Image (tube, rainbow, N blue to C red):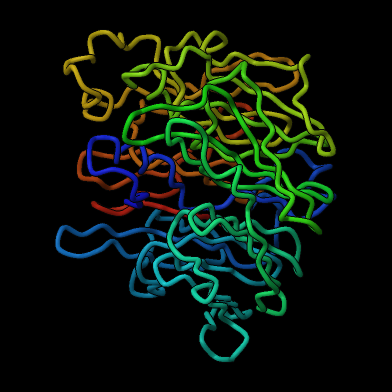
Length: 424
């Protein structure tokens, strides 16, 4: 499990939920025209890449890269042929390469795969970039791809936005994040989470929170900057929503969409300083500096739920949402005075597909209820995948169509789960 080092208490669970070991990003105007975008939504013709995590009780979790021609017919991954990547990483695909951010080491690695599905790494001087010289390392830093020649790392911890070239594997410089954006009254520090490029701009989900006092700015927010002027980053807010923390922004046609998740429902249900705003979907034009006041989806109301956990963009202007099942009485789960009850409970999350245009919802009937544990954005070939955890800490991976049909494609053994999907 990946964690931000914000607090030693139960709030570490909140911090852990904000870390998704994958990247929401868009690389071109063509992708914008196709619909909701993320790091792996463009259909490719090359190798299918699956990164998994193996947890251990006596050592740090390790990530493994599996290179496949297609999904295994038996639903099992072969670890004898997998490539060990080391401690947890963040990854994205650009063209014919996989780019891996080794957070603890503060470096970005370029990995290629040949036609025989053989992995090539560490064979030249242009396959690694170190960010340590700029003081950047750890999971506060968010890699965001733009194109084959441009990507960013937004790091609130070092107060920098670094620019680098995936094709050249060169670090081109870093711009400071303005000091007035780093903290608000009450010790609420800024957090930038996941990101997407759209036209000539870059957007990243933003929030202000003091993890020790539970204070949080009650608004959904985006950090936004021009690709040629990252130092002029702005904070754009919509106070109709719960804070935007765990869900990255995504692009659909000429709009950037943002979900105010309230840390997956924690702020609405268990935070001692409860947020009174609903979990909602808002949007703005890619060239705008204000949210569209005529567009709003209240997800709690639409899904008749006390809280959603997560939401992932789909094709055809849809959103796949995991939400607290209306059949599960939330009041019966509140068994402790502190926030412990929110984390220590059985699976309660159902799934539904929300139409972003019609503002309607259809429940996914073929999936069992899911748990809070380690939600990930898992999308490849413009298809969405949902990971559900079993009692042995293993996981089952389901493909979910826009029509709401689910099919199991992987059954991962105990203490193993999928962290990333991509197609070269």
